[in-house]
Length: 257
Image: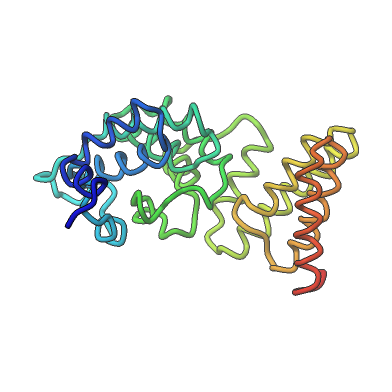
């Protein structure tokens, strides 16, 4: 026998459930992410009873038009709207900027797309959902999608720091990219610290570790220690305590660089 909850879920289709959750402001980011995935995969939202394992484990093509699969419809306008909503509530998530930017990019709105990609490159690579969304089809999962698209669009920044950062992000060797990006953020962190801007120093040290990852692994001992110091100086007591704890655990397991 089905429980009352199971009967309710069985009677509600995926679209209805998603709409109700958005209306009630429940799990907005997770729901919109699934709606984006389904919009790009040319399918309706699965029912609450259906498993999403199959849809999330398959390797979908990101743009059917480029793959000459024009018989399968992708709802790019819907995907863009959901992504823009996510960028407003969670601007640190790369996948929302990536998809919103590409939706404009593929429709010929180059300048607007570039502005979204520029926001996207500031997000950690660990927030791009590249496999589920499908952007790994372009990058192989080794590079930031927004950085790659900016390069392919011929974008040249007027800001020397942004220009240098993009050069680092587009290095083809993953290890070389991680080392260069870390050095970029570490330099900015040290400069901010000397200028007395502890908040900026904290952000740069954090990005040094979790933008594209740090190389070698033992470098995280330095990153965590400096995150703790700068967070404490900036008045982020809880963050500083957590970073100190992680730094101690890391040192005990891996040692210092």
